[in-house]
Length: 245
Image 1 (cartoon, rainbow, N blue to C red):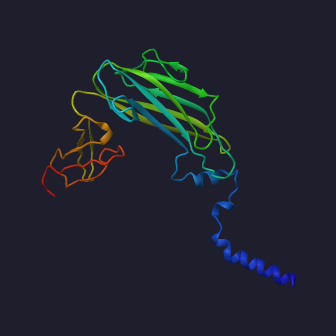
Image 2: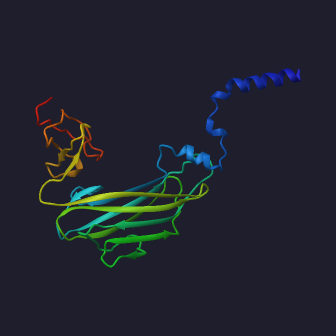
Image 3: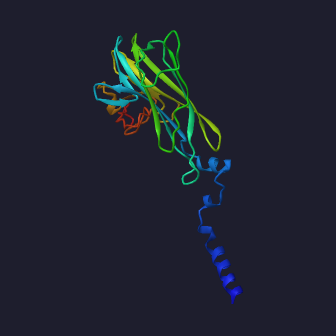
């Protein structure tokens, strides 16, 4: 009788084993598990933002004038790829912010910088040893910068950090843009994959609602409507000015 019961249990296990989660059979301490579970995910997200005084929001791009002081923010967020496994951490975080020639560091940082270059264009926060991020946690650094000249100024933040247990270093970067220009902001992109760039323009000079106007500069494009032509996460309602719709 005992052998019969054992046989039934084995048969049931074989029958239902395909329904078991593949992850349940992977060692929680192995590097293979981390590699598999981080495919298509962001272990470390880096965001670069600017304070938009007109709309009272943090955003990725703003208009400004020469002589203005703008406030940037960098946010680093950790996503533990191990789910319910061991609690990994992100630590030894290093942030390096590179300002273009027409933006200069104006201090007032929420975390004191480790160093700032003499020209005010490179600021570093090295090895934030007192910061260890668990899953879903973030660390933020905000600071001021002075706009000295007109133009389109792109600020870049580079972040390096170490994840415990799998012992992996991660690097990521993010940018934010200051439009210190009298006309509307614009971006070029091949939105219809025909090998020619088209232009999206922020006609109303309000970057929070996307780029409203579409221009086919070389007359080669087909109709393009209702797409995110400038990769800002907002739909742009472009018009085919060639009349080829």
